[in-house]
Length: 410
Image (cartoon, rainbow, N blue to C red; front, side):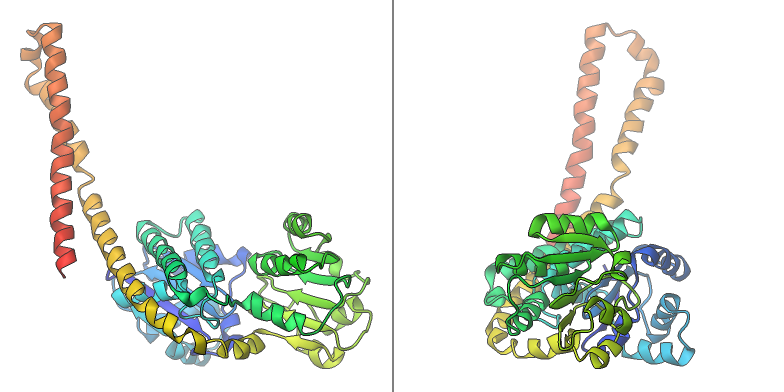
């Protein structure tokens, strides 16, 4: 457990623009993480990237200092200068051992988010783990970390008022959208097809907006959203010739580069000024030149962050109620970790006992067994099988109970 490490680039220590620079696209992520894992001698690694944070969660025998942090950040952004990497490494948050598991539990429970109480982080954490697990980047340790983080988060959302008056990045963006009084028959252009856009599409659908155009790199994912909430699906390549206009643009993709340039926006919007553009991506999908050139009403993550600050006051009591659950979650994780450690340490016992039994039957007492009749031999084998099971299960159960009892007393 003391080998768990976290490097965090978050809204608390860096501008959102800097965080976005360390986003990894789906195409690059696995290769970059595999390189970090190999170069740094890590057993496991996973990568979480959201609209307000980048978290690198991994296992390593030694503590993580600014120097190690810099080496990892340099692998992600080899184009950055040594001075840039050094400055970012010093500002990054680092968590080692027990404090790392507490940090991950707080992240999963949204206690560390821009928007306290938003539930999207649970899905984002689960997805991040599943993607890294599928790429063979994680192992048993991070499986336990992920499992207990999600269990703790669900406990908090179920048994505290943190999720009362539900607030999320999407719901805050939706408030901005509603304030513009856009007609329900107006065309809304959505770029991306991930969970953020899905959630925003649900808001639109539930409020009578069905004239949607959904653009995504993978057309089938865009079509899935169109089938669920109405509208039509197009690929990102079709944005360039798109000229049907729109009343509002909402974008959130996983791209490392901007998707919407000033020229493309002008073409798609037919040159209309003052349109609403909501950008929930990190890094941003919409080029900053769009704002001045088209006089758009722009809502980005900075605006969402400002609005979110006003929602923290009424959650003060809920935040206090979360603390015992976090501490309980840490203890449950420690218990599960130690139990799993016992199981792994004793996993050779079953095979060893089987080998002893097979040696006894096949070599040591082979001649004696030949003199037994069939019924006697069958009875002896049944007795040995029973003893084998007991010699496997009883010591393992006793060892687990002794160790867990010691853990519970600490």
